[in-house]
Length: 147
Image 1 (cartoon, rainbow, N blue to C red):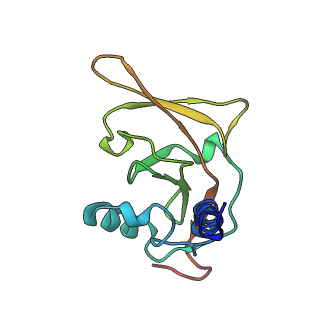
Image 2 (cartoon, rainbow, N blue to C red):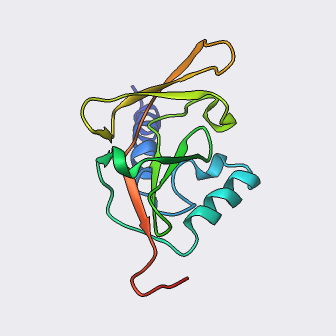
C-alpha cells in the first residue's frame, strides 16, 4: 500500500476523535448540521450557562423535562439553572420531529451513556430507529448570576 492510502485511512480514523475534542457549547459535534431554528433553540436553552465536567449517568429525577434539539442533540432541564446536554452517539433519524415517543431501555434508576432508546410512532405504533445516548454535559448558570 502506498503512503497516500495510509494517510487517507489514518485521516478517516482520526477525524471522529479530533471532532470529539471540540470545545463545549453550540460549536460541539453535531452543531454544524443544525438548522438556524435548531441553533437558535439550543442557544436559547444554554444562554448564560457554562459547561461543566461530563457525567456518565443522569438520575431519573433529573431528567423529567426533555427537549429535542435535533436528530443528534437532546437537552434535559433540571430546574431553571441546570440543563444537561447529550450528544447522541450517532444520529437518531426522526428525533427532531418531536412527535414520536421515546422508549428508553435502562437498567437501574439512571439513564447512562451507552443506554439505548428507540422511537415509536405515536399514531401507528410502528417502532422506529434505535438510538444511543452519549455523555451528559451539565450547563449551569455561574454562581452569583441572578439572571
